[in-house]
Length: 411
Ligand code: W6P
Image (tube, rainbow, N blue to C red; front, top):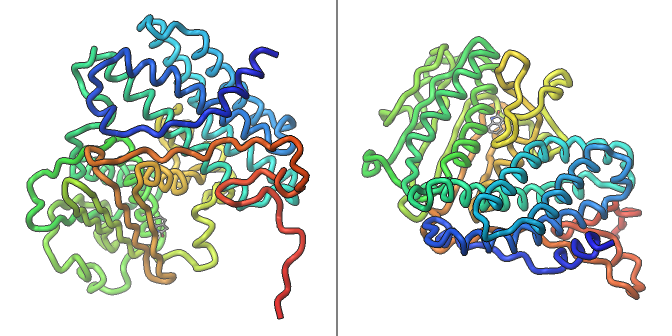
């Protein structure tokens, strides 16, 4: 079939990582449209072929749906006239619409598939597969949204990459929203104190994507506030004034229960790099659970919560039926936050002390520096004539599909 041949052809092309500098100030809309028109089909084709390597994907409706979305978007882009601006805009709008539920569908799809074929699909493989897929999605979403916002303003406004992003404002907004959500669900919320170095009290500006920064910080604050609120009031008055609290915060967002130890945020950095620390005294994470918080196969929400799904970034915001998102959702918030930082070459680390509390560290680069996007691993076709049986096993980031057949016993 013609389409199949074309998908293979595009899946074999190299994906081209983008310099953020190039798309912060889009000077030539048509040139940018041509880049998207050439690049998006390559990335979509890579995802289509990778998805098809999952054993038994056809038996999971959610996975069939995801594949169909990618195939339809591939076709859409191959058929659209790139130099007709309104046609191209309409095609991108359809892509956006079509891919709104991909995170939810792919996560449930892989959970179901892993459940159905536990010996063929190791949890490590499933997590690596989803990380690659979602990393790719972050890239295509960012490029598409950046182009669409610039195109809409006819090149005059800035895109979703804000050269003047104000982290202080983003963090205070995330803290206010997380506090409201926490209070709604647990009938209490701790105070959030925000600390900045002395020299940084003037509003710091930084080239970044405000909505991604918000997503990551909101996710961390939500986790911290939930932990503190569920653990309850500090046992000792001095717990309320220890650590950073000995200093005066730059900002304080008062919670609804001042008996709870506050969540403390530190914002530091310069025009090149931004660092955020979120500290809570919410009791920490048991050591055995610590690796699981990065897995898509794990959620702290009860089954009743899981149905209401996650608080998406551009997907339909999912709610509990009253229009309010859940406090503990779909179990993808932390792994996705991790991907958002990695996509920009940044990092997200947690240091948790069981029985005490958790510190989360975010590091992100300013996008006016020499920063390139991190592109997902491409599809690696199984070469004909390769006699090595192991070479036919798909792998992501070096993680193979199967559980090892037998443990290697040393000594
Ligand atoms: C917790 C669990 C957690 C996850 C992520 C960030 C902060 C926290 N605090 O207790």
